[in-house]
Image (cartoon, rainbow, N blue to C red; front, side, top):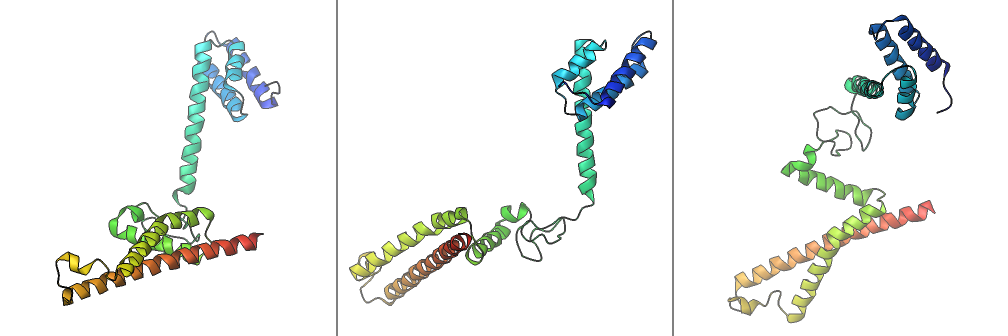
Length: 226
């Protein structure tokens, strides 16, 4: 780095003067060298250039390298402490709606979105988190990644349940009633078939509605951005 600020130049002169006045390396020289190193670090000077400047003023190469490393660690620690102190008393905000929330809450009181890791780990809270995600996917303006994810989740279910339903209706019975060991006119057999038929139809309808809403909203968003 060819350009040197006046403050760094003055710090170099002060360090040289301290070294000239002192019979050996004393506390004044140490403070002057540390001050010079801090100025160079704050000026984003390369570490090799800082070591070279310190060596030109009389420091040995190991001492100059250790001083620069110590100053870098010290300044990094100060910045981290300043950031922690700055955000220690700050009010957390919901990442979804920017509403102020409490540090110990797991769901935003404004939008009901998950705001903590516990909301995705706890078995019961995870169910609510998944429902919140599906609801946002079909009610907002989903991105392409959301659309692909919903198709990967509900697309195979829809195709599989539809195939089972069509195959069962083609054979005249949902699961081949006589072959299960029940008489053909058994009430239990008929009730089981009706229950399975209703469950499969509901699953197909649920998957189809979600896929339609997500895809339609994504296509509408694409047309609006064009």
